[in-house]
Image 1 (cartoon, each protein chain N blue to C red):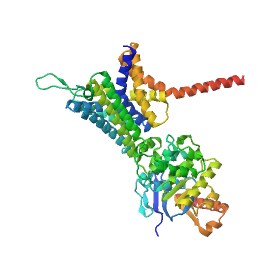
Image 2: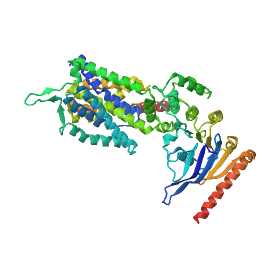
Image 3: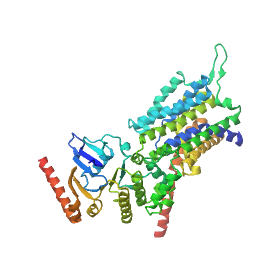
Amino acid sequence: MNSQLSIRGLTKKFEAGTPNEKIALDKVDLEVQKGEFITLLGSNGAGKSTLFNAILGKFLPDEGRILLDGEDITYQKDYKRALNIGCLFQNPLRGTAPNMTIEENLALAYTRKASRSFFALNRKDSDYFRQILASLDMGLEDRMKTRMGLLSGGQRQAAALLMATIARPKLLLLDEHTAALDPASSRKVLEVTKQIIAEDGLTALMITHDMEQALRLGSRTLMMDSGRIVLDIQGEERARMSPRELAELFGKKAREGLSDRTMLAL
Amino acid sequence: MDLFNLLISALGQGFVYAPMALGVFVSFRVLNTPDLTVDGSFVFGMTACAAVTVAGHPIGGILAGILAGALAGLVTGLLQTSLRLNPILSGILTMTGLYTVNYAVLGGQSNLYLQSTPEGGTPVPSNTIYKMFGSGDASSLLLSVLLVAAACAGLIVFFKTRSGMAVRATGDNEEMVRSSSINADLSRVGGIMLSNALVGFSGAMLCQQQRYADLGCGSGMLVVGLASVIIGQALFGRHSVSLGILSAAVGSVVYRFILQLAYQIDMPSYTVKLLSVIIVVAALSLPLAKQNLSLAKARRAGKGETK
């Protein structure tokens, strides 16, 4: 069976050949099935964001392959693969253009799937934008002509989420996308995220530092350390696990990684 | 010179330079990238226009000017995107290189009058679009106004299309454009080409209006364009792109009017450049000055309370 996302032996070294060489991704193998919602844990520098950036094509890997829905995208240009990959980062400013209106931002993101039209804004698309904005329940549907830069961080991130998912991507990457928001906005954005993923049946990977969240959301949890996937739990095992147990396991795996590396250094 | 003539003169010049101001608006405000190609592409538009006009094609001359500007923009755009050079350096490189090109286009001289000399005869002035349209300052002004209006309308429509919006978004948040599966490099190159095509258009208009091309015409052109954009912005504010386009064109006219006034108080013409720089610096530093002023006020008020 074909996986939605298939990563095989993906390796990336930064500053290779220098004393500062860092193995950011160490022969990572990962198969993600269609419709799977995976939470991804790992301490800073474990390689989570590097993995995302490799999938997004921000840099080319040293070795390995990335397949999206059976298509090899390893060497595809970043903007080309963005046709089928939506992404959202911690900083709400990254996903939206501040000097353009909410409507224009959505229209730009919708360029991927919209029917060809001479003008970027048209009645039919606008009705659709109004409808999805209304589903956020933030009153943004009445502010479509407002400049994006005037919105709060939470509102901007919610809009960015709509933009990332507006074209029903084959893969949605969420890099701690609620971490920079206040608790109320964070809850709201997370709620909308769950709703969109469920409704559209999206395949998603979400980076988080919250153990409880990692278990509660999605159907599978991965943990990375030193550029490798060190833990992969799902099904029964995952259902029984408490955030506390996961945290302990997390600590143990991180220590193991550490001692491995110390051994190698010796 | 009375005020009426002064106004007519300012309008005449202002509208000829207006497409250049529009070009600077596109690079500086829409693409958010200072583009120093302008000084070179303005003259390139002028020389290309002169060469074709002298050969007897007035309308072709204007088109050649537009094309020349776009070509200059293409070079700068490719330096910025394909070679990843710093935008400012890219512009300087193109501008400097164009100096040689412009010399060559004028046949190795630094200026060229729009006239042809039949064998053994006296020079005959070349036909220009201004001559075709009618004689006199009024008809000349009218033609410039029509051309600028067409350029403004075209720009306003363009920035509402999908490609136009991609160019705007590239200036606003390039990463978001890539994430939306749009080739941001292409948008950037297209935007810079559009910008310089307008600048070249302006150079071509000036060339046919004054009936000669001169390599010295381009120096400091970017500052003039910036001054126009900023003056327009001061008058109309920064609301939408459409308004920005119109205010850049109006700014160009107001800028010429200010210069004309300066001439009236017997300032020598070589002070123009310094005056333009002062206008730009003053306008650009206005927001900071305002901020400092309100800060100082708040501080004074605070002191008053603690006493």
